[in-house]
Picture (tube, one colour):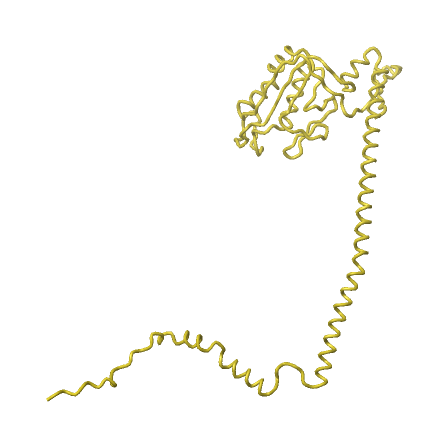
Length: 306
């Protein structure tokens, strides 16, 4: 007996490949949320498309648009009117600044001219009233330039300024002990004077008996004018004798100790001719002895022009 063919209608159906991605399928098939779609259909059915229907609503919308346009127009007109005024004020301010700057430059030039005139008159006064020693007085006071043989001493900071304290300075309070300080230059200058220097300058600034070497932070000031390393010291005198006397002095030994302890760079050389300028400013003082009529032998000193 022949067997009947199998019933293929009862075979299990194969699941869809995207059955596990129902959420993604729903998003792809329904790009708009059903809630939004229903709300849109409801508004269309009610006639609420966002456009006012009544005459009052239309007049209100038109009035709002007119008011907004009026505000924008008035703002633009005011800005256009105010622009030339602002530009004019700016030009006037620039002209005032330029005029005041020019006036300040003119006054500064006048001050410099008067300063030079006063200095020249002081130098002439020293030369005329110095008696037989007028030239020497002018030389020692720095009133005249000096030219002659001498020495050139260069002092510069160490290449590596991050060393420890102690040594000849006997202090750990220096941030960089390899940096040249104001008191170092004071000792150098005093050592040159004591060694027989007739005139001294640092970086082209003439020193006198009233010159001050101070510090402002890490900068060294000579008569309130800052110096930049390396510090070039020129001294007029017998070059060989002056150099030997300075190196053998206590200040010369101090400078050598700075070089050995902190690598501060120094060099001294004899010069056949050095030229030192006159001091930029002088203070002239005169003193006259009083007649010794009291028997005390005291002298009265009077301050002259300054």
